[in-house]
Image (cartoon, rainbow over all chains, first blue to last red):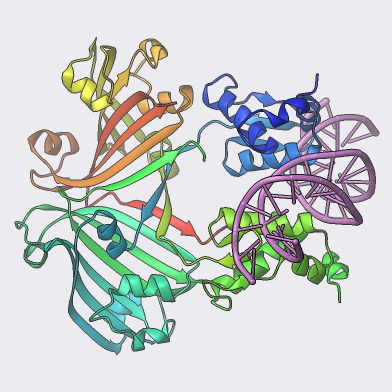
Length: 245
Length: 245
DNA sequence: CAGTGGTCTAGACCACTAT
DNA sequence: TAGTGGTCTAGACCACTGA
């Protein structure tokens, strides 16, 4: 009873996607609970009347999405959910505000070029002496302060940054478009506004703020460290997760 | 000049991974900047002396990771980074504390089963009347309060929850292991502790707190809504991103 | 309309591992 | 040791689209 004949019908599209979605549905509805062994490749291949490569592509994608676990000689098994993972997309602030349909404002507060002091080196995670640019700036939406940014850029790793004009271009946007990176780490925490932050964000001292600290590397070499402070009650970081595509 | 003969040497492993990494390196070092056209599949295939399927697998993975964009008839192009996205993994709290090597403590503060009132329905996003469980509990690490949890579970969507023993099992752990879900949304924000939170977390009134609100659905049907409050200066959400595996 | 990528086939050999 | 998944081949046809 091959299903190959039906392949023209299902508006779904391609066969391997059909297979993947069929299995995905069984897992997500609980029909195949964690630990359940899903049919062997050769069984699925007979069921759909297709070649093993097609089945393999479907199963490989499910394995990549951590929905199943594949073990040689044993078979493929439904994984138990490990954590509520979510893809947190932290866009460039200029693009983010633009996407909200609000007017983006940018103001460079200070920009200093200096040999890295001990504190700079610790923050960037570099050991040997280097030059850095230290930038402080403010982003706003419709003339309301949106975030305060405090950034260090390692000039040895990003020499082009010396030529950038940070009076016009926000450093985050410039870096995103000019410097390829390989690793990044974000840490999110909460603080209360001190005098400087309250002043910069036009909020009350003691108001809650959301802090994002981001470090970016290229092949293990530190590129930049940034600290973004948002008004905590006005700004929410939203992360969505679709079980899979 | 086929490179097929060298295939036994490079400890790297498989051929398609070698191809993927070769291209990845060129992109990440900036040798191939955004917009650069990658060699056609048949060119790469000749260069490595392999079949097109192998090249295709490598390029497909790069496209899946958004590192390149593939256009029929035109070729494959290096994409410009869209945003600093990061995979935020929010593990089950019990597992998280265990992973830190600290003793996990759990305390059910209250658990009420009731017909959903208007506020419950709004929070869950359901329109028709339903029954819910409202849970309030506290997680601790080495006897220090770690987070306060406030949760609603839709009993119509998760009838098994009526049988769970939330005096012993934290609801998050129970749900994660028993209820498959398809969509989730997280919102992260900052607040200051009011009397109740300060009391529950053993912190001062006015101290900053990190708040995670999570909604979970299965095939569009709301399952649960939870609000977790962490001491903001002690807890950091960390998200790492590897340019790609 | 020619050339690209997208998908698929019907085989093959190998590494790994549960039994 | 036998059976599974992992990878690879040398073709093929098709949809789409840029020139």
